[in-house]
Length: 241
Image (cartoon, rainbow, N blue to C red; front, side, top):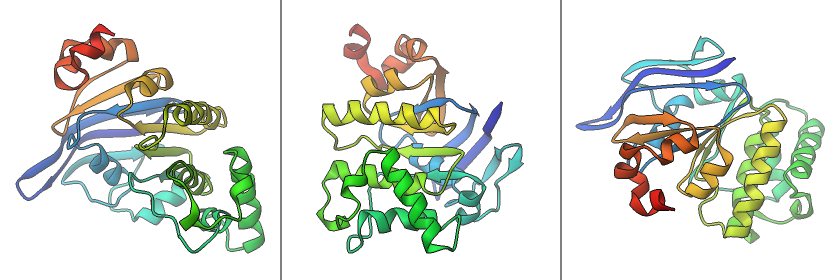
């Protein structure tokens, strides 16, 4: 079933066209990769879906209902959550308190928010750090905390913006396993990522974005072998590999 659909979506900032006539359909329960060079418009696209920006034209449908004109907190309440490239935890609060912030989007009860936060921390294998302050966390910990806080909002669709950036190879492998676990719980994932090994192993479909447009969409194998994808982003070395 189609869960999220963008149709001819466009956004400009002055003379800079960030997203142009972009189309995508995200099916429920899938993991979709969104790749492309820096400046391709990937984060802008996430900002449009989350209603941080209003599009100049086009449509955004979530469960066949338009998101145009909504506020970010309303989009979150409907079931779309996101992470950010630059993590910003509440540094003077504990990991548990940080995740409770996400849980408060669904309840006003501190007891219920704490219970949901503890449940999420257990799921992402981070409960042993629940009493650690945000300022004491490593880069890998920040990424996991950002993910946990988004999950605490109980999303149907989770937008992950370079969630693997700054992680070492072992940490990336563990995170890929965790994202598969999250998908198995019924959460649809859209992943912006530059690590092609991780993207190819994780995603069922991949969309290559270039200069604000969708250049190609297909399975990992189709994208990896497409001449346009190789020329615009992957490079001959990746194709040879």
